[in-house]
Length: 114
Image (cartoon, rainbow, N blue to C red; front, side, top):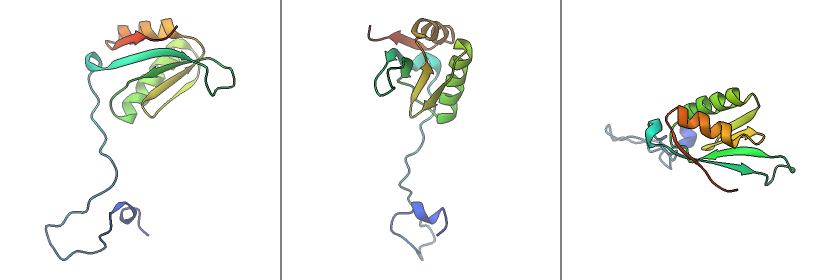
């Protein structure tokens, strides 16, 4: 089966020349400018084997832009992490430094939790 056909919903062939296939994949939203992003920075230890990570949530936009922001934060902190599903995970407790970098880049960010 072709890759394109697997996403189509139920229609195999149509004789209508104006017919367009509908895909069940959600359209990716455009990335909001930093001034309109409302990011939350928190410390997280759940489901991580007792290790602490700094979790940044609330990013609205494309996955590529999330990856770019995640790379910037990991580079500034000098640690590893990941960026996927609208969340950025930075290994270790870097809440203050991450908040400082986000505010410097023009994002609206606040620290939540202890």
